[in-house]
Length: 379
Ligand SMILES: Nc1ncnc2c1ncn2[C@@H]1O[C@H](COP(=O)(O)OP(=O)(O)OP(=O)(O)O)[C@@H](O)[C@H]1O
Image (tube, rainbow, N blue to C red; front, side):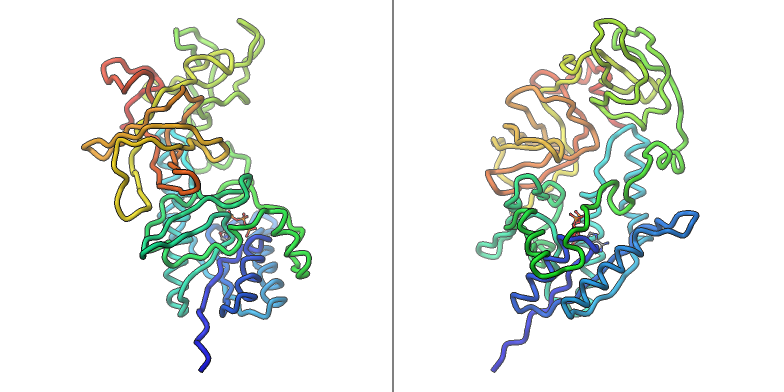
């Protein structure tokens, strides 16, 4: 008696990674269905629309593989559950990471539900990450390609979501993925990787943000109060930013960097030199912390962490706190750890979970009485 094939709905973006994910699943004997999501209306004045081109690539790949394919529209859900939060964070002067929320709410939320409605047993994506299961507990592992590992963006997924996920290319390197695509003659084999804001794409960031949030220009000052010029609106700047400040040459001659923001007084703080002490912190407070395992790790504990996607792991010690704010102390001072970004924890290959960086501090722990612009309590 033949076993009923497991039905897998693959998130197909029209890119090479998800094309190869679909191909590999088909070769492994799954019943594969392609599903394309449209989460943003990106048509311009001329009617040009990248999403339409991407969907055309999905059609070509699905036809090549002989699998059915559909399209689904989550523009409303994306706007309400991801984009509104993204704007709110910028409004608070922080630098959010929409991909993380998009994975939890859309790709492994709305998309997963839709796939289950289509009778899927599981969903698959072309993420560079791996999964392991032991005794009914799922673990998220880094992708095998250290340059492409995307576990950082997936730390907010829970056991239920991981139990329904397959990452068919997580054990491969990008180079191998392209080779497989070329050998199989996939029309997307040479397509370049997508860039820009999650689902919104490559934009002139200032122009884009100013359509949604009113910009409030203000003063740029050094931490000691020296006036250095005007800024275009705090939301346009992020900690450690060097470009676009429009000041140079003066003082030591070294370049200027954003070292803090005072939201109440609308001041952007700048200092000279990449290694200025104001850019370094000794620890952070994380909120919205999520642990992937069934039980949160016993703390305090030592592990490694990344404070931004493109960063080597750093050693940290994690302390719980009663009000669900976790204190993370760095083994050595860290450069430009930025509120709104995520801190993601690892034990070797295993992604333990992560949280949102709410504030950073110098010394042993935050000292509320002695706040500096970098240490501002969020509202
Ligand atoms: N518009 C979309 N519709 C369906 N699934 C999507 C879409 N965009 C992304 N995904 C899924 O999420 C995965 C990771 O998205 P990301 O944007 O990081 O992809 P990528 O590295 O550009 O991959 P790809 O080469 O497949 O586009 C994709 O491989 C795909 O499975």
